[in-house]
Length: 607
Image 1 (cartoon, rainbow, N blue to C red):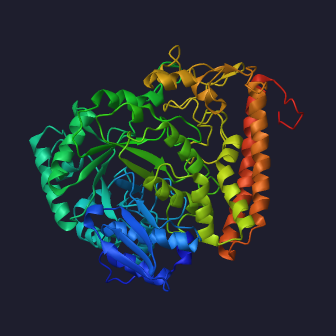
Image 2: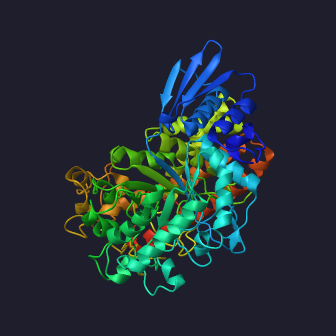
């Protein structure tokens, strides 16, 4: 099963060469009785204009725009949506990227949908038909860049730019007709594999090696989008090793790829800021801002800094990264995570569109030029492990096209295209999906804390699993209080924001409840806005989250999913109910043992 494409099954011929050919093929297959004329207007690029005419429809657009317009028409007619006589549409972001964390041995870092679709045994090894399926999935929702390998590049991953380059070129040929360009993650220290004793970006030998490599790579893949780089983070090499800053490192690579129209996407995940848990001033969420904000305006025009949406690491609840508001002279990309690393591993249901909507509500339209998401794919039969996790991929594509996309509209459209339920059942499914994020949040870490997960695999509760390690992921729960003071009087993290945002969060009395413990350290007796104590709110949320998960399982049991999907959905819901019970009991017991305060409603909390 592959979600909405099941409505439009198609065996794509190997002879397909261009997005316009793909558009004609998709239309002829999905709408055989509908007259559609395609008008090539190269200047429109990825945009399109859809006209309703007496004899049918006309789509005008650039090469990829024709394909995106075709899918818009297919979706609208299949979903029985009313179209205006003239619909003009263009994507908000130039690069709409998928970052796969696939390794050459076929494993996927933080992958919850099986093994890699691209690699086996240290080499590119894939089923071309499955690659065409994911290319169609991407094209149908307007995505245009695919980075196939892990940002943590370990041998033999470097061979994609070396011995495996002909295989990379063949892969690019498969996805090119769908308007998709390849990107490759590279090892910053790769010149050192070739007899150069350094990776110093100011060393002329390093510069020459990258220039020659870029020339060779672009000869093989002329439409390669660029290189994705993770440097000086989690043990990865980078310019800090040589006393250089990240602008110097990124600009060296940017100069090498500039002649070919390539970009350098430089990830701002710089979390080598290890700290002692006794240190109350060092604060991990400050790291990206501290490293990059002073460099605003120093990066080359073809460098894009890719910034995680929050200052931590894809937690259930964290604020917008201040770095996204601090570099007006630099090209930025927003990084999201489709893979549910901290949000249920694609076992627990967690629909992300409501979370992303919150991010974009605080993010000015002009702040970013591109968007990337860590893939939730694998070689499972349904590609996303949990069949309902496909809604996240679908919604992500629509969001990249238009950041103001309504979560309910995108979720209902996905449900209609995928399952075609009657209206009442479609609403039940959409309600479950849209409420799942808040339900998951209720039974996991409370009120913006984060990180109460089992170390390393990050599935299931462990309140102090990361409390004393070196990564700064602390909640500081004691017998009297919990949370981190990130105001000016505490770690000062809140000072990285513009004044209007600081004012929103700096006072516990006005700070939104769901961010309260991210920004403040408070006693368990602290009175919430609704009159409950802090610890009572923690108890209530966890019991409610567990109860809502049980109710969600019953709702999904009542829906007539195809049997193949139904079996997986119900099996995973059983696991989620068990998981929610574990979270509820363990977190409530943890805070009860610390505070000594009983539940005001007399429910069972274990001693």
